Structures are given as structure tokens and as C-alpha cells.
Image (cartoon, rainbow, N blue to C red; front, side, top):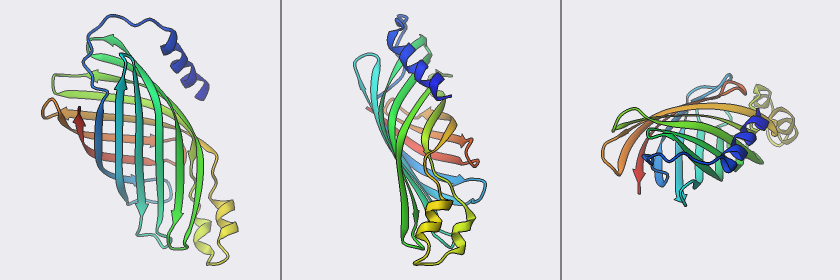
Length: 218
């Protein structure tokens, strides 16, 4: 999977673009609330912030922060992700863009109940489409491969301080790769402001995230 996504990015670099209208904003900031669950836990809440800055006619940089907390568990378990990278877009038609991106990811799993945390760093590569369904409605979809999926294992709840460090290191693994499929709708209330609803699902332990957000286009 990762080789295909990296090939998409390379192909976008060398492929000439069609002369089509540019109907998509690539300089924006969005922020919202998230609801998360996976195979072992549900009821996670958090927030997500993402910014994108366009430069040139084909390129953009991006940065994002996502947080998911399961405070109702005995370990007060949570995830934090920081993303940053760059991408390119190609207009396929007046109302359809192909997008590819490559970036770095930093991920942290925290167990505030034990005062412990684990961190990992890796990369992500992805590709997708942005489609204008109408003047006010946009549909986005992409698939992403990353190398920082963090694992939850219920074995961790059986340990107690100060004997948790080795158990966590064994039971909660880093260096797990995952593929994440995402889709979202954005409704433009005006040229500069819109509301969005996004859904993503990972093939690693069934992680699912819903996000309700507001977006400011600059």
C-alpha cells in the first residue's frame, strides 16, 4: 500500500496538468470536536485542528493536531497526533481535484492514571479527491498510509505503579503501520466560512473517528 501511495505523489510531480479552473481553496484553518472508538474502547472525545497554506499553483503545506481521550477508563487513556507535511493537487475537471501528500507524524499514547506515556515518530503518505457537488457542497475522500498506529491492549490494566513500565512497553506497541480511509462533507455558509463533517476508519484495531468542525478559508 505505501509503495502505491508514494508512486501517486511521484506521478503528480512529473505529470503535466490540464488547464482547468481552480475552484478549491488550499489556504484554510479548520477546528472541531471529535468522537472516537476502536475494537477495545468507545466513548473517546477530543479535538482536531488542521491548517493548510497554498504556495504556487500546485502545492500546499499542512499541519494538524488531533487528540482523543478516554477519560472514563481506569487508566485515563488518550492519543495525541501531530502531523506536518506538503502536498500537490491536480485539476482533473473544473469541479474535481486529485490530491497527494507526504508528511511526518508524531504520536503519543498517555496513561494519566499511571503517569506514563509512549511516543513514536514516523511518516504518512496519502492520495485522494476533492469534488464540488454544488456551489455550496464539497465531498472529500482519501486513503492514507502511516507508520505510527499505537496499540491498546487490556493487559495494561492489570499492572500497578511502579511495575507498569515494562508491561506497557510490551503490550502497547509502536511501529505499527496502518491504512486509514477518510471521507468528509463541507457545506459553505459563505466564501470564507463553512461547516464540515468527517469520518475516518483505520484497518488497525478498527479505530474510527467522527469530526464536526468549522472551516475558515483565507
